[in-house]
Image (cartoon, rainbow, N blue to C red; front, side, top):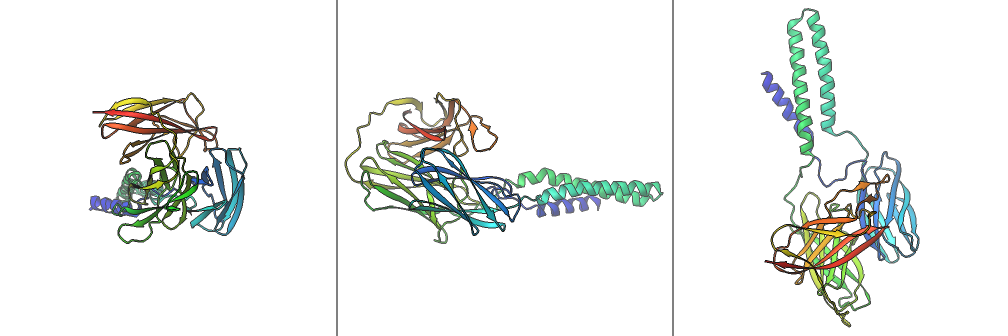
Length: 409
């Protein structure tokens, strides 16, 4: 009977300790979202909110020199502006006021572009399993003390019962303490379908040297409704890689969410020909996804490219790529010291891996030191030639270095 009681309480309390979604930013934690707006690469840092009503601190980190622009912020009726000065990369703070917890939207505006970033205001509070554990150990102490008192008064049966109950409670608390951290890594819904992506460009026939918009409309594969549940994926809602067929044009940007299920980015091409657009994103409580599409750009051709093979590797096995940047003060970008993006000549394969070394955070938490060497572990599925672009940040500037890789059998 005693064992059944212990097991029953353990199961009940474990069920009460609700699993946490792996994609929800915890209360009190900072949320980082990269955005490419008005031609500028900006990271929006929404600081954790300690109490509500109260201030909401937002930092705009400009990773490169940007034009003189104003970005407006609006959250729950409270608004503020931040001016990014010409040629002055760095961190620009803003303070807003929030009145309630729950879903909010952050509105960014620059020139003729805008983006709406959904996020949730949460205040720190103990998890259910933490209250169970701490309460269990506290109750155990009281029960054991009561058992000692009962024993001293020659109430043997009461002392045994209180001591046994105390043991049961401490077993339950210990069980929840061991199991609950594992529950936090579970996902509640792994059956969500992939989003279907529709690529369009405006104007429909972009021309060399003229600005155009690349747009992905995402719809749920089951309902056909806009897929508007993107999770934060490597410090952005989505990553868009646009390359020309010959590998001479490369852009890694972070599209703006202009309406439900719609992602947009403005670009200017420097050469005619066929272009490929690859978008990486992740739906909440579902896996990561890569979608792609093609479009053409008209006009004069770009300069002839004389690609030089930088490395030769075998196909089908992991290899290490080392890049010496010559700089010991690299910064973190998208939470990483460096990025390696690869694409085969045909455009059927796109790879994106991150630097695997360690980073040391600075006091403000926005910049991390690293370098000068970047190391990437990557594999190439088939023989052939692959374009590769290594990206890293220094002095708030995003540096992109192209390479060509020969993959043998």
